[in-house]
Length: 321
Ligand SMILES: Nc1nc2c(ncn2[C@@H]2O[C@H](COP(=O)(O)OP(=O)(O)OP(=O)(O)O)[C@@H](O)[C@H]2O)c(=O)[nH]1
Image: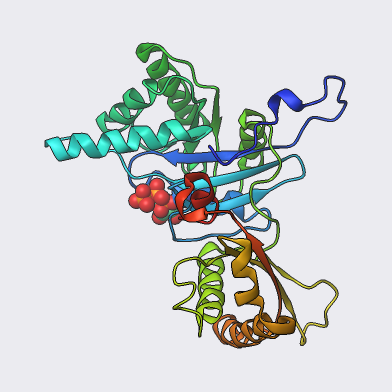
């Protein structure tokens, strides 16, 4: 993904522990293949976030698996359908493009159902995505005897042979019985690029909440200066984390946010004499945020200049546009 710093070349040669990895994976397969249940089982092992809003990656993040050695971000991609119209074909182009953007694709095939035309269609399309590692995941293994499972493993392997590619791994899992789910994460992790974590740890990192919080701060910051700075303010919430070691009945949520303006000369308008305006912005938006999230909040606001951000595509992306 474009947002990821490329650290591959910067990794020291003689490193003894393996470097941290982070990246995106998606599960594909026909309806009912067990994709959602598997996602939840994987994510359930560690602190997870889920969100329903398309992110900067243009995929919906379904969950994040935080491990010491890797961060696995599970995203949803739209389903692939046999095209009957030109529009259908165009939509499938979109699916292929999004598939090509993730780091690993997991193809889910239920153990208790014959490999059918729907599966073959999807795998044929996957075969065309050359550079992305593909893992075949036989799901719902608790529903079949070992003989049937062995046959399914052979069938999926033969299908790849037939289509001229190789699965990076083939793994049977049962999400319901939690069998081999951890192993699946172990197999995906080394296929991700070397990268620091892409999302902060902690369970309160739900993107829609962060966006809403940013919006509340922006509203408060614009109040009274709309004429002077109508479109020059952008707010990015960098972090939302529960304060550690608080008594259970007195939680506090630390929110760190940056208010971006375009020019240094605008700083004074936002901050106000002796910082009073920024203080008011903080107090006002904090009240709204506490009402929204239902928890006391410590709000840490910083004003930063992002020079001419409205005209700079790179900055725009960073600021969430
Ligand atoms: N026995 C068993 N059932 C499973 C397992 N995983 C999923 N299921 C069941 O299979 C059905 C479909 O699972 P989902 O996870 O919703 O499948 P999906 O691929 O996300 O389905 P779509 O959202 O329609 O694409 C549900 O009734 C699940 O409870 C499993 O490991 N074992």
